[in-house]
Amino acid sequence: MLKLGVNIDHIATVREARKAQFPRPLDGALLAEKAGAWGITAHLREDRRHIQDADMCELSQKVKNLNMEMAVTDEMVAFAVKIKPHSSCLVPEKRQELTTEGGLDVVGQLDKIRVAVDKLHQSGIIVSLFIDPEEAQLDAAKAVNADYVELHTGTFANASGAEQIRELERLKGAAKYAHRIGLAVNAGHGIDYVNISGILEIPHLSELNIGHSIVGRAITVGMEEAVREMINAMKPYAK
Image (tube, rainbow, N blue to C red; front, side, top):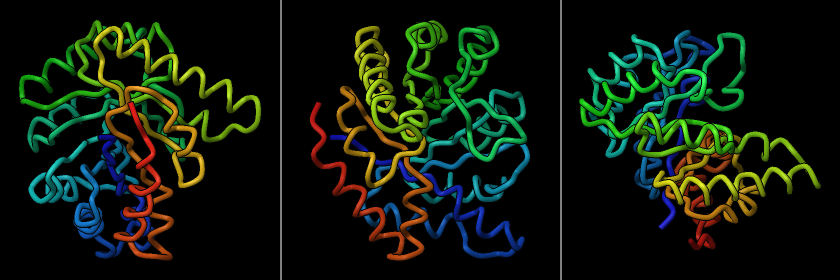
């Protein structure tokens, strides 16, 4: 069964716009779980633009399956080891970007990423790598002993027409290749209630991590209804 991980970063974005106490990411996370979300994802960025250290500590104690998105830095690895989320997803990070742009270059950082993966594994944390749908990156993910890859679907989400069809074929091919070499496959970035129909064509998926579209929908209909709508949209998926 395809699982949903709800990214609650942008609940914190609203809070941090006023440096207020509310809304609390934890409250949204618990509502998402109540509505059927399997996991909760939160990205503790180096610049702390939305999720804060205290949020991560609360989430690690209160939610069932916390996935910590994080840059490959000593600080973030040490923090993850401290709070022990269920899983982690290593992502590229640039200070000036609005959101994560592109996948992690595992090929160019093999030794650094292998060390981070080993430290996380030693603390019992499952490790995923957020990568573009490229065989070289998949081979590198396997080489550093990642448990999962999360295929970057942002290019697909931002494309249209023939370009979007080509990108979907790349994602499908990457998922098949990852499965063949023994990597479990997740997907995320830019997935919404409309383009998910294409995402569901990707084989071997374990989990979708979706944030902005769900939080945006929740402003209108509430978090529980927004999550239920996304779960219903995921039901046609078959491996």
